[in-house]
Image 1: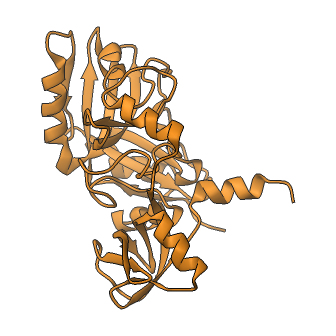
Image 2: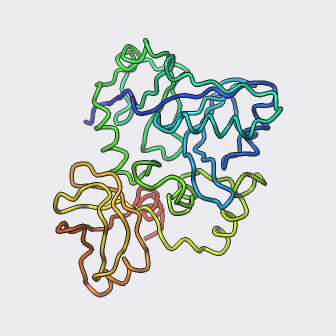
Image 3: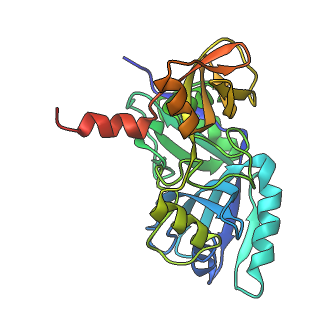
Amino acid sequence: MEKLKGAILSDRGVIRVGGAEAERFLHGLVTADVAGMANGEARFAALLTPQGKILFDFLIRRAGDGDFLIDGRSEALGELIKRLMFYRLRAKVEIEDESGARAVLALWGAEGGGERGKDFFADPRHEALGLRAIVATGEAERRLLKAGAEAVPLADYHAHRIGLGIPEGGLDFILGETFPHEADMDRLGGVSFTKGCFIGQEVVSRMEHRGTARSRIVPVAIDGEPEPGAELRAGGKPAGRLGSVAGGRGLALMRLDRVEAAQSAGEAIMAGKAVVTVLAPIWERAAAADKPS
């Protein structure tokens, strides 16, 4: 039986957004329905450019009536704070970098028999990712042990994520150049198409209704050792770019039409000298399993 595994996500940081107008402020900016969140609930979200491209992707958790915690990549937090401050204007909102005081944890695998407490919550992108928590930095290792998890390196968490086909900005796609549909946010609950306005909403809604996403991030099996970021070619034509790689698996942003044409013609998809095989992402595997035979 697979053991419960846990990792401290040292490449993640935490921003607290609080104050009397925090909910309204965030709800009008990000892709998720912040107003519909219950206390303790987390959602996947992004802040977009006015042209609908992802500037920052993150998880956001309601930590109280007027408090929200944003869990994002550490290297991008400084710029995210600057952007939030730019939009704050005169709103009664507090924006604080709490990365020094808080750590992000992930648990996945078997259920385990330890104690987790209210800090742990389901990763909103997909149940197979497991649980997540934002805890005091000094408590991180103890909380993993208390949960009954085997502590593993950060690389093991990313291998788990990559195997499921779940992309992260800055690793699997270029921030500022990628639409939410291309990064699979529409499939992973990262965009509300019913909440109304948010920055970039018109472009994203148009892509949803017209089905115009020509490219998507897909999980791939790799026979060879290409570098992350390697160009992909299908039938001799540029077909995309490789993102994260771990243990013979990877994520790639690919032109779907060129992939389909190459597959129909029996032509290999290449990353340099490595052969790349497109796999079904976790949400497509689940949908196929639910269909009647």
